[in-house]
Image (cartoon, rainbow, N blue to C red; front, side, top):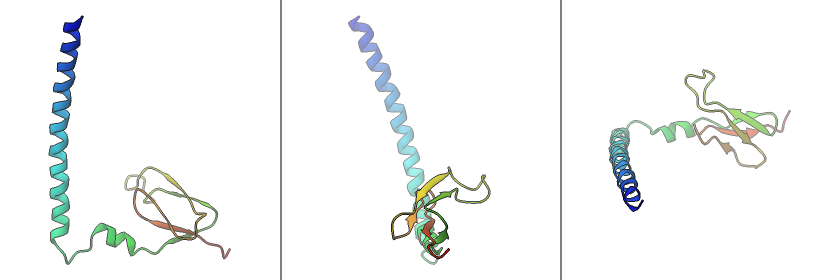
Length: 103
């Protein structure tokens, strides 16, 4: 019995080792991609670009954001509550929404 427990631990630790290596490879690719974005300072970052879009006025308290009208270009649907005074931000795409009280 004790032997099989040791074997399970060995299998588990070797499995964890391989996922850790894959993760570090992915994180290197991500930081390279980010560095590429940041080196050209004449171009605006995606964050700056999305912040230039004015808050979208909507009727009602809840908005459903999908990122784009085309589902292939959007993101999972995010229902956003607009009860606060400041614009509510979509966690996926960064678009901002406010409740239009003048309707």
